[in-house]
Length: 338
Ligand SMILES: [Zn+2]
Image 1 (cartoon, rainbow, N blue to C red):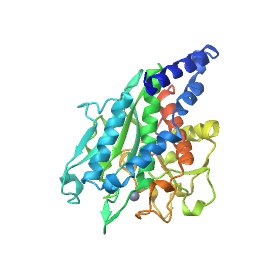
Image 2 (cartoon, rainbow, N blue to C red):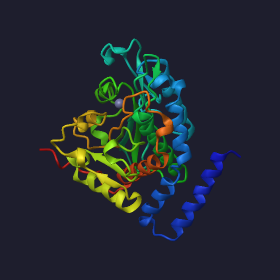
Image 3 (cartoon, rainbow, N blue to C red):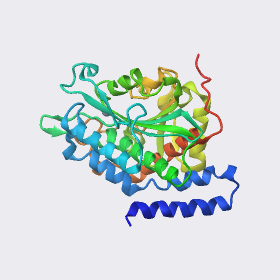
Image 4 (cartoon, protein in one colour):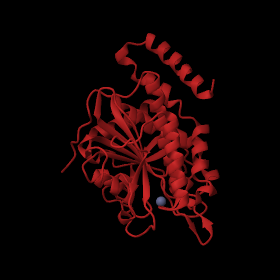
């Protein structure tokens, strides 16, 4: 028997024991923790070191290394038992080179994986990251470990945790769509293409949790190993902000820093990663981010510098928020549009 099968049986025992000591309606926190704990440092580390390895050549949009990364992601989703996107079942959405503004000689790929909800399958939570980076310049590989092998590893681990929950009989009520975007470094082009060519009607998207750089400690936070920047959570839905706050105060106890959420923040991070292509369609978003550092967009952004334990904890926060969004009674409301 392989390791995977042992793990699933172990989870079944744990969850049925816990259910017997709780009422059925009061099992959410216990179930969530059971599956959050499947997000393990060793798994996170494996994904980061693979995606940010020299073999993947800096994952330049349209280049060989990006396609190798897409293949790795699709194979991981397949191994978790997830399907591809709804329309075709494929894990890859082709982004034609024409949509890449002549910045690539080849077509490129967004990677998608789906879990169907048991009660409201047409209400979908997106968990996303970009997986492309800067490729090789002047003979130097830009490994992009923090930017954004870190967020991409988080998406994989969250997908696996939901897949394990479903196999153990605790699948989400709403659906989840996991997307790894290409073309982000070229100008949010993969997510722009997806939101213009969505594989589901846009009004089915409940919220989008986007992860871009969560494996390091930003320069202005040196010495603080317990924070994450939260951007955009309250911009469209007060409930989304509250859910993320409660997930953190209940389980992960990180310092949630809203500095970059200020409407007049000069960095304009709200507009600078893939979530914005959903926010512009009035889909509530959260952008999870660690801030920039000396290795940002340098060939020195390497896997050995990733804080694996902190990355794991931040990933668990996002999992808990996704779990609540997917399993709560009502779809969150959009109540903050001016
Ligand atoms: Zn970047």
